[in-house]
Length: 76
Image (tube, rainbow, N blue to C red; front, side, top):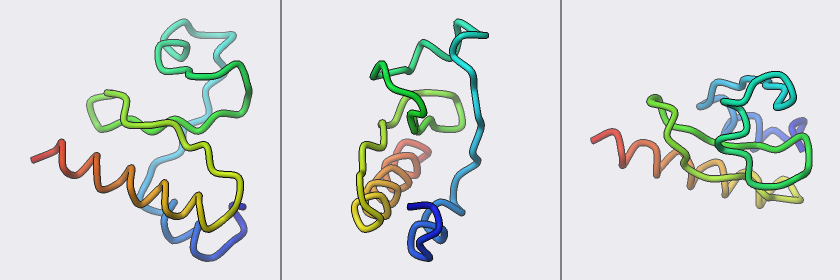
């Protein structure tokens, strides 16, 4: 999905950080499922926004856009 141009554009608004939940307890704070990898969106203050559950590029683009809107709304 990350090779889709629309997803690339939407994802460019985020900073991706890879965290191994087995190595830090802080990573488990926002984990929502038992699956890895898991895409979790946090705001600048590390507050949970959402988990991206999309299974196709169009849904991922929409979920990323929605997460960005929510993060920006909370920033105000």
